[in-house]
Amino acid sequence: MRLILLSLLLLPSAAGSQDAVPIPLPDFEAARRGVEQGEMLPLGSLMPRIEQEFGRVLEVELEEADEGGMVYEFEILRPDGRLVEVDVDVVTGLVVEVEDEEDDDDDDGMD
View 1 (spheres, rainbow, N blue to C red):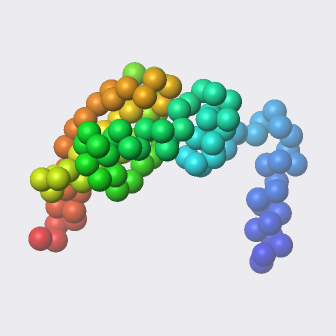
View 2: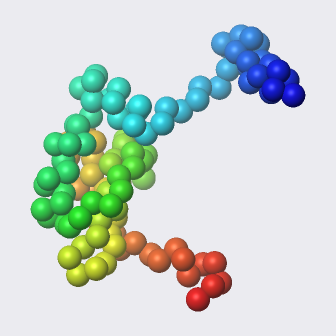
């Protein structure tokens, strides 16, 4: 069974690179490459400013911006207890959007 799964995993690469669909890099790998190539600001250089201005950073993701380009999407716990999402342009370091996080737990019908 494992041999069959391994064969299926290797099949697309054996078919030739012309038909291969590029696999997107994980966030951390895309960010590392972007920083190494000078195309993105390092996350560590933005964190102190974002935490000072908005609050405690809980999570960061690399996302495609609505208007193109890439943003670091910070999930922030504000001092007043609210959760906000802060999008920061990866090239300029400018805050491009701040929005309140909705409580997604209400969608499951369990209160």
